[in-house]
Length: 296
View 1 (cartoon, helix red, strand yellow):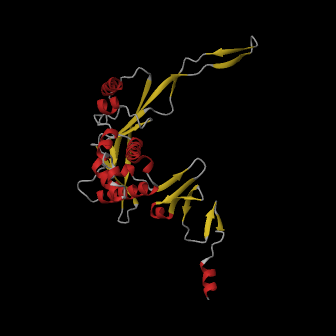
View 2 (view 1 turned 90 degrees about the vertical axis):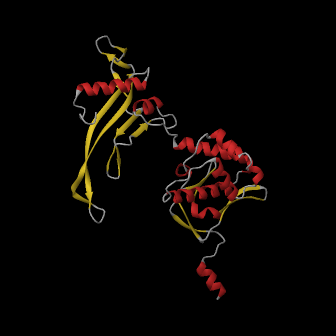
View 3 (view 1 turned 135 degrees about the vertical axis):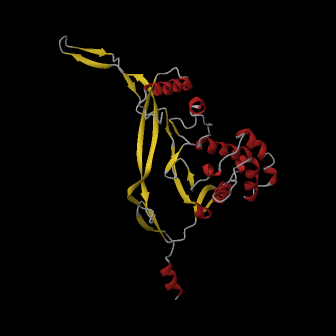
């Protein structure tokens, strides 16, 4: 397909036939395919684009779009002075494709024939027939699935003993693994054993960790990629309030019970905070200049 640039009818028909067999769908769909070229800008010594092209990236992009019938409409018949229902026989191609792919992938500013970029409208349910049967690739769990699996394991192991400190400590350990994996020839993935060690380092009692590997195997069944689990910031959410905390400031947040009420306490280093863009002085907190004048 790529070699013929979609110009050879016989090759295109073989492509569509194989695609239809792999899709194995009872619903109607349209296949939109395009052959494209991209002149890759050459980089100069300052890592800036110059006027000369550094080769041409040739690729094929394909979208698989569901097809449905147009809804009937009401029309006014001026001759008979009445409103009639008019059925449309035209098919409507969905604006959003259900699946699609781009081949070859674009890696390191060049064509990568060993990879294909795949799109699906339902990340948690990729079209296995298309991915495996047509593209010849192995399906991979989505990021949402991996994160949900990790949450399920943590809840199953710790239950009500899962704390703010444990969650943030595990996220910090994941950050460390991701950073280390960038230089390691054999990257570390999250297994039941690795999670056991992370929870142990986070201060979880050993009696709570006895079933870690068993629960991990039941809920996950394989390994998880740390770069898909790590969170760039800590997000605390209630039905009415959302607080975003940078990971390097996670220790400034405390969950406590004060006078019988569950509270979130945030350490403030400054006497001035910003609310909706307005600089506000924290009530009862003296600014550093005022403290110095009082000491003098």
